[in-house]
Length: 490
Image (cartoon, rainbow, N blue to C red; front, side, top):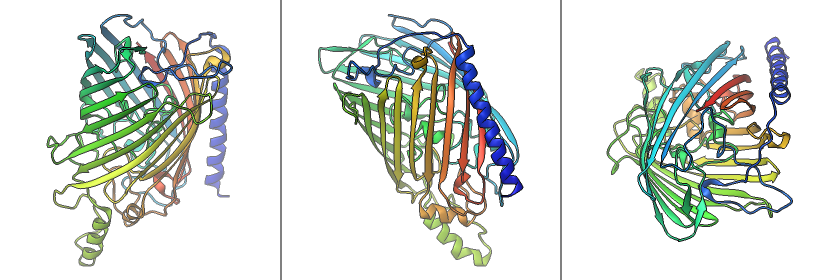
């Protein structure tokens, strides 16, 4: 074993030991609070469960905040601040390129601060507006990983540091039945109750993962995992600008134990671009998701979600970029393939996903995701991943009388298709990846965290991520990234 590998393993063991000590301190030192709550699945529906096995409390519905939120009011006002500090030591790398994760010691702190506002105009219509500010830095400016370690990072350092409109949408509910179900008020829905059978329409600016590919154990960087491919499906190249937002429409039909939603959104002009194309008859994205609120284990609540999407945008084709490079490199016209070297043309990308969550025992929820896309066209909006599989467990601290605490551990494996591999191996650059070469291997990541409630709306979360084959490159890594998150709910 080389000296560098021994040093990395020793550093990994020390980091894991430190995280375990921090978790133990969070449980033992911070005053315990015993609280109880009923479980509620997304969309205001309550799952069935056996009397002998109480379901897990919701992870966000009754999160404690610094100040009380409006109750039984047509207004909503809340906020949050999320700070994530990450670092990694030197790690082995045979070579590095323009878009590589730096193999030398690096550290960075990101921040996202959001003000959530809303007003219910009547019993079926509301207006929701969120103002956001994001800044700080990312490890290697966000490059070098498909499963990046921090979902809060700003991928374009040239973006304005001023506050901006995060979400701004009209939400309309059409009742299709007279009976009602209770609804947990959040910044995305202010209604105290909703018709059990209904059609919800949302129009405006939003993020597709606000409504698609949600998972109660693995979708929230404020309280759960930080990695891109654990909080979202890595192969879901959902319509978004650099900050993760699009403009469009979502239609959501909800019944007693199932729902179906459709989303239409605008795509960016270029990969990871800041500007959207305002020609929806040419450039657009469709998203479909079927949700069945039924566990795969008898008498235990769970959810199964099936996802499909199509994107139409000015995306390059990997095989064409490599063919052009091979044809012209002899003449010295092209030194590396370039996926953006093509005239304006609309190509199609499509993909599928499966999203599972299953209650295993009191306060313990397992989750899994599988994703796949056709991989021929350029990775364009989310990340450079054509296939992914993730599985993990989330635990609510009510099991040890600390209901506001959360803990979890998960594994994800990401991959890319052959055309994408050849493009990177020949020296091509994507909007995230490009080491100048590639000895392909799946990017495998393990992440664990413990979120401890300190006082009122203040939370501290130590964690660690271990990454094998960063950027799908077996000539680089492994990398260990310890994390410390500070979160405040207002």
